[in-house]
Amino acid sequence: MSNLTTFRVWRGDAEGGRFTTYEVEVNEGEVVLDIVHRLQATQAPDLAVRWNCKAGKCGSCSAEINGRPRLMCMTRMSTLPPGESVTLTPMRTFPVIRDLVTDVSFNYAKAREVPAFVPPPGLAPGEYRMAQEDVARSQEFRKCIECFLCQDVCHVVRDHEENKPVYAGPRFLMRVAELDMHPLDAADDTGLDRSRSAQDDHGLGYCNITRCCTDVCPEHITITENALIPLKERAADRKYDPLVWLGSKISRRRPD
Image 1 (cartoon, one colour):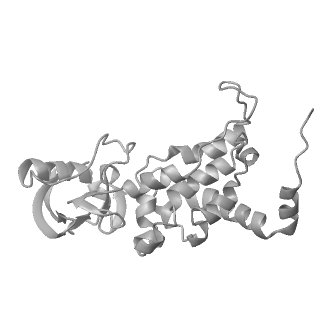
Image 2 (image 1 turned 90 degrees about the horizontal axis):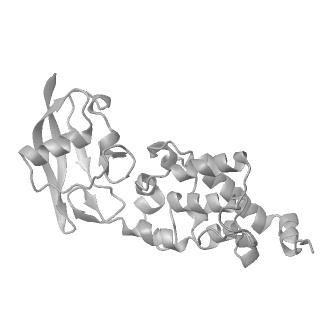
């Protein structure tokens, strides 16, 4: 069973653009990316779109569908309001390259600013041991597919371009949180306080936990409650709690 649906697709580049309207066939069970491919095959061969796996695992086909950041390959047409036109636009937070393709290099720059995992001293790869509870806690964050929908929807950078130099965004604050709670990360031994760094270097204080990042995550990662709020609590403790501050000044006793 098929029907004709109106699609309003933003066409343009960094210099500007406009919406172009298409009437396109939609079949039962199809996703938005199927329709975009049909448009390319039948009406708009020069339509630029980024995609790869079409299975919700590469994060490439991020766009805004009816104003909501989503993966086109995971948005079924049957979940959209029936009988209404569908509006496709590129992610608003990032500069447009052409049509639905945006320049997401901001995110890779922020990724490079997060200090990597620090291996525990005296242990070689293959000798690491962790409790299953600790594995499960950090494993949630490793489900991230780098779609950057959480970055796109975060109003701290979506509505305030001036914040981009000082704010990493939820995806990379989540990475800091993952490392900060990792029981084998030896960053403290190098003088790196990840919680303090999140506040001072990655703009944690700009986040006001509106939960919009969690709401759009296609992997259902609880970014706000499981990563950002605990990270904020640890950062506040280490900066303002006098007992925590004192404890950080006392050298750990090491076995002889």
